[in-house]
Image 1 (cartoon, rainbow, N blue to C red):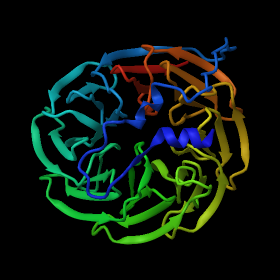
Image 2 (cartoon, rainbow, N blue to C red):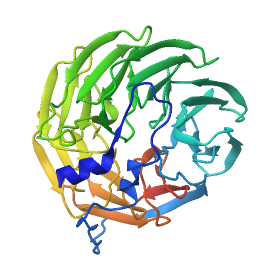
Image 3 (cartoon, rainbow, N blue to C red):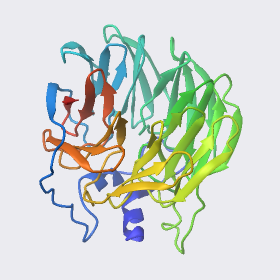
Length: 386
């Protein structure tokens, strides 16, 4: 099974290429490996009620992962056809709708001043947060699959050829670029970066996690999250996926065909690690680390030592998003547009709600009074749990 999954996810990633082959392994979300049928959803004894606070539509994401972003009192979202919207987070009212002028592959990064999206041709496009007017455009060296990150007066972009670019948020001028050798085979899934306390954290093929300084892009430290294993090159693909998760003094990441691990964020000293494979990364809160593994089981680990707290396996092969902790519950989306709510302490189902029937690829995000999900068909659903 591991070999079949790896074969469904890797592409030849040639250093310096500006575009990817036409075969798109992101179709993982639209089809199943041989013999892996999604678990049938059975009725649950709901202990909480969930309702839609508001809904909107931004447009189809096609085969790419678009993640909405909360900045201030607004939600920003994007679609494959270039649409970018700003929506009032409390009411769902569209404040503006613009077009970036290109077909997009990643977004959204935003703060109170700038909204940033990117394309599979390596173009990075910034719009004015207040009205959606064009602000600046620039390029990186290859396609962008993970959302740009805005912070510290920078826009930081991770390109698919294992480079990290930092641009001035005001005018798009390049500040620095970090480059490492591209892997011949890699997982074609979003692997983003996280900004925290003057550092940029990012994961790479070969199971590597790095910390860069935001001022210059200098390497502060590098660690190996997981070592490649297996007899074939496909079986040895071990890439850090998703965005590094920060909590207090820790940074945690997950690797495909590898491990979940947490490190002291200033020094890179490992706190703990567990052998497990994920395609969406890891999320953390004050007590636990959460992930959905490649077979569709949801796990919670004690954040202090990596001890297993619970495992929920009734969502097997449902192409789960990254679990998102939301107070006493965690929320997770699936390939049929359902949002599942699990108890943070036990992993038991507490609620479930359907959206538009199309897959969710990005994790739910927290908004005032609830959470927000975006589906492949472009549906934006603000949900409240009671």
